[in-house]
Length: 99
Image (tube, rainbow, N blue to C red; front, side):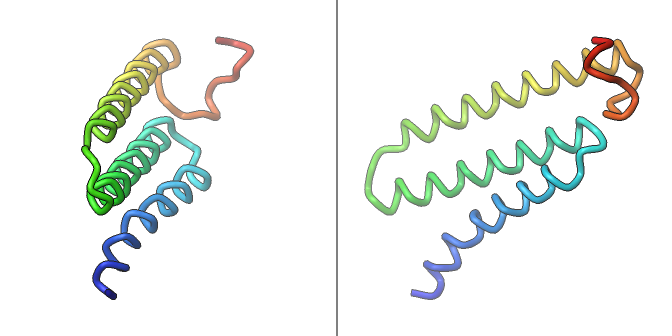
């Protein structure tokens, strides 16, 4: 029973650690994108654990993984665009009004 509790606890701790990293370290865009991707992977892990314990099929979780991959690709394309226009991904070096 304790092992089952720990299996469900690890992704939840990972989600909260990713949220903490997302909130606390907002200096560079790459760090925020990595923390968002870490949250998505832990959400996927938690969803797979829940769906497999209920006995359902995993089609919805594959759809979620596809959307998370698209979110990562969109974030990286925005990062490349910002680095090309501003020179770096430091949030303090550019303002919203100049974009």
